Image 1 (tube, rainbow, N blue to C red):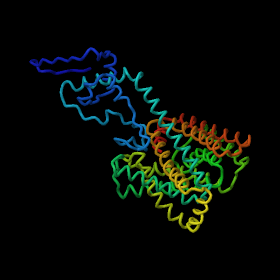
Image 2: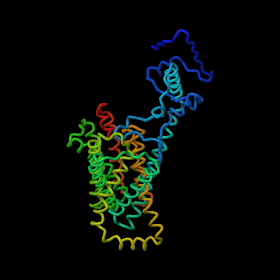
Image 3: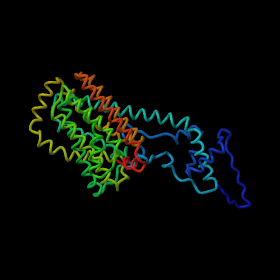
Image 4: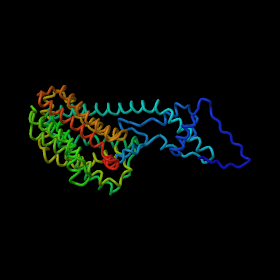
Length: 427
């Protein structure tokens, strides 16, 4: 109930244009949702423009954002337009005006917000898939000519580091406050990220891209096992049953793979372990740094991973780089073609990871998991068409079973208790 205590001599008239008619029920719904504060300029705009401002979601495929995105550790906390507006001056008219704006949002939500959000989500997923396909194609093209995954993986982290430094320098992305405890907390997750990245790159250099992605689809298996062993999560029986098709499908695909190579298989498996441990330890060590958003977190992980990886790359294969470079230039014919391929692999490696963080900011973990499963299908099909890799029927069947298993896993984990789901969102 709203009570207005007014001075008897005060004459207050509340009026609104005829074009802004709001139902009493809508006003009551807005009142029950709490108080929101609107700036003066916003309230003088037409209803359609107000609704548009309130219902839009923010997606920036290239990282150029006007405000920090939601936290990677708590994707359920969505930032809306109202969170960034200034507080309304105190007075009798402050609350009723907020109710009217909230009522407008309720009435127009079904007409404006949902289609807009669906379109925005489609764009984010489209960019994510496209960038991933481009990365996988040019990454494999470079490795076919220049089979030195340690140097290429280091270069890709270098491009991502420079990209983020440019965004921070020109204030295109808010630069996080850096402290010694924050850097220390990043050392573990960055190490596991380095292991995951270089292992995947080694696998790409030894086997077909499609085979690496089939094996990498078994990541949920490692997630369930390591989360249980380390006491991070407990899973019901249905989750354990859902990973059986993944194991079966990956096994069938491995034994029937034409380009099978033991190093390639182990590289993909170790990559899964690295990324799972990165997620687990990120959740633990970065719990106190929720003010750092997902994109900034990934930027600093890339920088520290580069410092980890490049010295080891020099030790492992540095003596072969010059000779390998001359052979690659001779094979490709034009040096500029080789340079462009290398640059595209680096740029799109960072962009597709950036898009995945932004997609996770805008959607639930379940939707993200399903989208990631479909992404692997799209990448596998695209790379088979581009590189014309021979695929046996049993190999295709094994790949399909493994991918279907990841879908079952995402459905099984979505039925966990709300408390456990909140815990998974932070990872």
